[in-house]
Length: 272
Image (cartoon, rainbow, N blue to C red; front, side):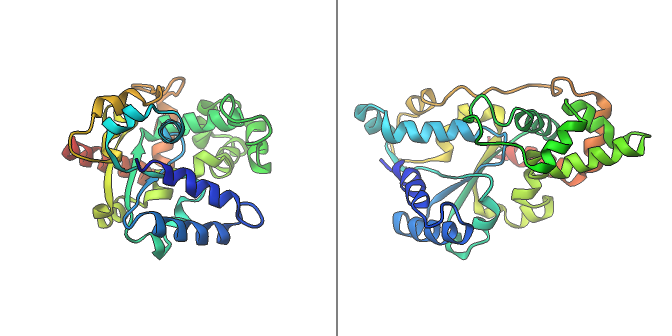
């Protein structure tokens, strides 16, 4: 059973001098990964793309799963989930050159809307109160906009003040500024680095393809692994409450995000 590396990595990082200082985190992560696995599978957690569901699954495999079930799963390598705030720095580190990568992607407009609402709630109900408090920039942005639709429609407002506030919000709100392009690069960059990615899929396909994020041995009970996946809430169609104007404004504001999404959908068709 190889799900424990993620927990061991987390434990070592939390013992780092000075808490989660960036350079210490990178140094320890590199050392732990090389020691634990010659070719780790790193899961790139793009915010609001079912990363919490994968994290819960990995913790469950490490701590709560019946040994008889683990025997049937035949896990040789489990993904190590990199939290979205540390992904870009760690993936540029040469210590991760051998790693295979996985990720989940999502409709950009839907992800922007979901990210806006999560930061508006300060991560609740899943985050502990006081843990994911607003930054000063987020507090200012939410003083202007209380819904994602109002914010995204504001990107083309005739009122210069509203338009400026909307542009500020897109840069200030954590999940809005850290989108797919932030982690994967634009479409051209992704195509150049395509060979590094072991597997990826749309968020709505994640529960039915969870086994492809792992390295399983012959005869593995795939359905038993799928049955352990926590419920993933997925919206279908147009994001709730987003107007056509809001969607069009997002595409005009961040065209490279939508171009990357279209490429990922094309690549996904070849992975099915």
